[in-house]
Image (tube, rainbow, N blue to C red; front, side, top):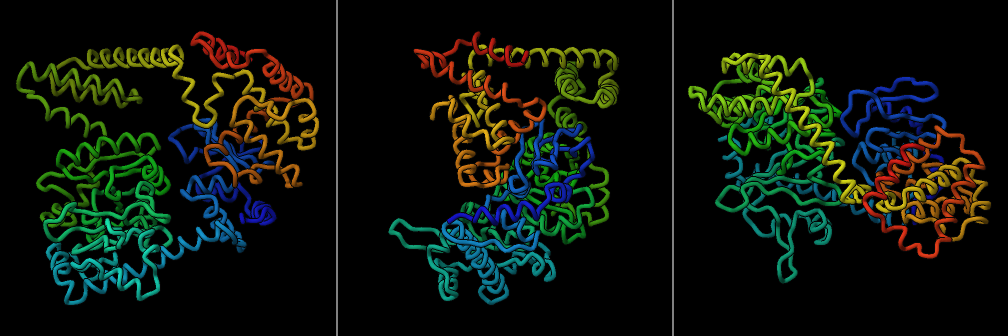
Length: 583
């Protein structure tokens, strides 16, 4: 049984969306509403609007939108029930639980309890005679007892079932252990410990819960590092190692290291604003998570080839979420851990303060590819450097680095700038051409993942959206709409589903707002509905407009061969797009 609608309405009245959103971003008054920089995509001009009267939000830049529950779902990476619980806790309310949602919640709670017990087991094993190999490894890496305790480091015995037996004695079942990914299932259906003969790194979330583990092998087993698989409480692409420490120390800047030991070594050296990804390259979700705690990131990846490639990828992701990135230029050591051991914390602090800009990092990489003592090397370097400059958006930055390149090569700065500007214009022209080609080849139709039929039936979809917006504002109009429109009158499946949801709420006498439907739509779908309602705010939404919308759908449904309507040529798609923009 789902969470009672009466409680959802109580929650909505107890959680003002402005208060909730303002605890994550800075809001500014803009007429009746408030605006802010959208936390879900990179931007410099505020495009997200918070509507006080409808208790909703919508970003006109990326399409994120919905009610206060949807906002929490997106920004905290939670499912619907978890978001409701977080808001309820914030408002001092208790969520009535029952049915499937309650079972899911209980399983997650059991996994968290199981993980906490597993972490205690690994830590106690490390301090026991059986954990001498693990302790020897940490001592070799010069970790202090204080650091080992702070991170709750442990050791998984070289046994197939020591953890399983321990957890079984504590009352956990094989099914719960498997759901937590601390045991694996054999071919014969039996269970065995996932982590064996490894030093263990508990992964802790922002609320202090142990959500997963990483383990480093102490023999010749492969892989060298083994990380927990995704579970109901853990998604490796959405979490960061040591963020539970770093969140309070960030001060606007985070250090992004490559692995567990780098993070711990940097933390032990006194730099507590350090995090790492979890066995994967930096993901867009992790970049957005970092953007909530820092405006600047110092990327401290290894100096080897893979580390530099990962740095290049991370730079692009941080640019997308509006975080300024700098790159640590590590010389004389392969990684931060080794650098700190060789040169000490003072030198490492100087290294951080003198971290290179992204442009310096990219140009340095290019210089390594060519022999600048030869004319051919200079020409090839100049070609690549001009290509890089053409991608810089800030003209002042382009001028500064054009001057640096000119000094290196002995070429006039204006010549370099002219070439970079011409190449930038050429790239934009090519981009515009690609976009046109997508329209011509009908690929634009498939961009809309929420309502993929919208481009094929553009006129009808816009009419449907007008009807949805009208009934949202005027629930009493449902009976009139149904009297004119046949039961299957909607053309696109998504809009038809939203209409059925709205109809169900009205017939059950549930107050119609975005919160009433948020439990039945994904955050992305909520964004679309919020956008439909936000767009309607710009029009009068009269009864005549409603009739016009209904007429469009009636005319469509009255066509003899309605199947041919969806089979449009590229030119027809383009004409419809042009017509929609002119309206």
